[in-house]
Image (cartoon, rainbow, N blue to C red; front, side, top):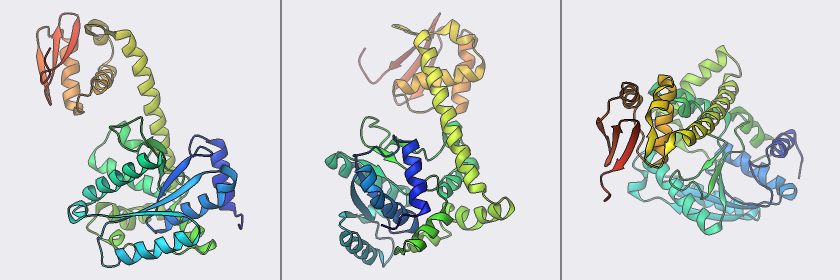
Length: 329
C-alpha cells in the first residue's frame, strides 16, 4: 500500500472519533462507482489492516440509463479483482420513477442486506454533499434538524433506531479532494449521466450555485459543512435538555400544564414537539405547535385538538392529555 496524506488524514480522524467506524465491525459500503464512493472504498480497504473491519461492497443499479448494467458489471469485476465481497441489486421500473422512489429503494435494499450481515452501512457523502443539502433545505424552508443535515452517524431507517447505523466517514473531505484522491491512487471512475441532468434540483445547486459561492468565498462548502455539524450538535443538546425537562413535567395522567405554560413560547413549542414525537404522533408544522402552545398558556381547559392520524390532544385543568382514538381505551 502506498501510504498518502489522504490515508493519514482519515486514519487520524478515526482515531479521534473511534465511534465513527468502530474497529473490527462489519461494514457494508454503498459504492456507485463515482469519485466519492471510489475514494472512500480505496482508503478504507487500505486502512483495514489498522482497523480490522470486515468490508463488503453493495451497488444499486437503478437502470436510469443505458450504461447502468455495464457500469455494474465493470465495477463488480474491479471489486472482485481486489478481493472484495460484491453484492448488487437491480431496481424495478417502479423503484426508479423518481429520485425519492430510487432513494427509498436503495435504503430498503441496504437495510435488508445489513440485517442479514449484521452490519452497518457506509456511504461516501462529502462536505460538498452536506453544503448542497443545506442550501436545498434553506430554500425549501427548514428547522434546526434540517440545518444539521447529513449527520456523520444516524439510524439507517428512522423507524428502527436500534437497527443498522448509517455512517459517513468522508464528510471531512470535499468533492475536489475526492477527485484528487482518485487521481493519485489511479482509481477508475464510472460516471452516472443522471448526475449532470438539470432536471434535478441538487444537480443545479452542484453545478450552478456552489461554484459561484466558491468563487466568491473560497472554501465555503467546507465551512457550511462544519456549520451543519455544529447545528446537529446543538440539536442533540436541545433534545437532551428537553428529555430532562419532560421527566419533570410528565405524570402518569399526562403533561403538567401549569409548569409547561410558565416557559417561553419557543421552549413550550419544543417541549411539546418532543413529547408528541416520543408518543409516535406524526410531526406537526411550526404553526400547529405554536397554536397548541398558545392554548396551553391561555388555560383553555376542556379544549380538544385533533392532531391527525387518530391522535387527539386534550387540555383538562392542570393536565395535557394525549389519546389515540384508533385504539380502545
